[in-house]
Each structure stands twice: as structure tokens, then as C-alpha cells.
Amino acid sequence: MVRTQIQLTERQASTLKALALARNVSMAELIRLSVDRFVALEASTSREARIQRALSAIGRYSSGGPDIGADHDRYLAEAFKA
Image (cartoon, rainbow, N blue to C red; front, side, top):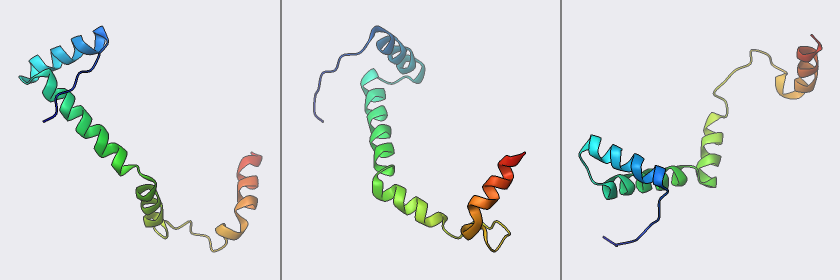
């Protein structure tokens, strides 16, 4: 492990201390878990991951109409006339 020093606000420190006590772990362990979650979240929201998620949605849903893609502007205009 690499030792590092960080600065927390009073609120962050007291919240972490309370959570650590409730979970019976150290504040350092909670910080490591938090960093792991943040890194995993960032990795899953990379540009490539977002593109793959968007591509996987192609063809999953059906509008029921054969011309939605070609006439979407007309459908929107009709929907917002009300």
C-alpha cells in the first residue's frame, strides 16, 4: 500500500468516523472503498462504455409504427399540439 495524506472537512471527517464506528472498520478502509467505487464508476462511464451501451439499445424497442424514424418530426408536432 501507498501511504498518502488528505484533508477533509470537519463534516466529512465526523461522518466518516461515525460510519467507520458503525461498520467496525477504520476510516482508512472506508476511504479505500470509496476510492474503489469512484474508480469503478468512472471506468464504467468511459466514452467507449457509453458508446457500447448506446449501441446495445439499437433494435430493442418497437414503436409499433413503420415510419417513426422517417416522420418523427410530424409525430412530435402532433403530440405537442394539445
